[in-house]
Length: 237
Image (cartoon, rainbow, N blue to C red; front, side, top):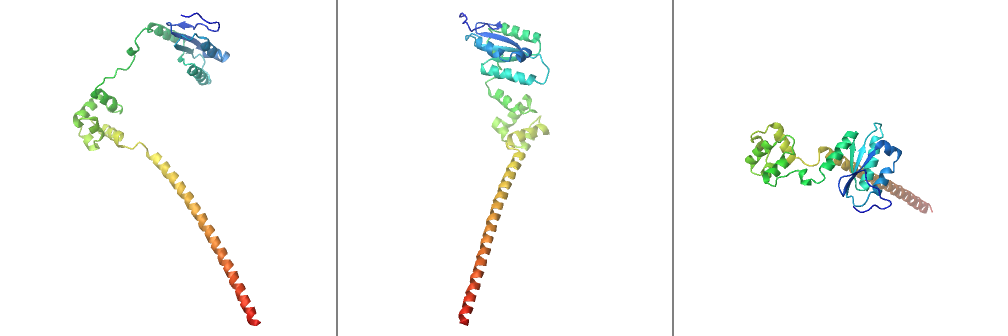
């Protein structure tokens, strides 16, 4: 390890040359809100994995806000936050980190088989009522995932091991639209509101035209009356 600078401090726990942990309780965070940020900044730069073990030792209504503050600080400074509710739980995490420090990460990764049957199982068992036995029956009946997706309810019903619920679930998954009726009703309401607005504008335009026509009629009537009076006066002369 490189020697520490003046402003650097060692972490509370060291798992390896590049992995470390800090301990913090929420009660102490309430007293010193800036402590965690200062401690993270003071860590040597050669630590790549920085874990914050946070003890949740308060039970009032502010606990969620305090955890949110700590989470934000961890996110900004690229730290991993682990919340614990007892000292024993914190010790178990620290022991496990030290125990598995040199373990290959592939040990905890999900093993996914790279074949057609495994992929079909992953897709179709995502439907809650469908199990792996149903997947085998569906593939034997329809031959492929494409055939399963494009089958009808009647064809699903002929597949062994599928009851009404499973048939309905398969049909709804592959044939119902992504948008629900609620969304369609909202769109219809928006369109109807637009239509009402357009009709209202039309009515206003029609009323304006009618008023103009009435004014023109009144103006023409007055002109006719004036013309008649002039002709009568000329006759008398």
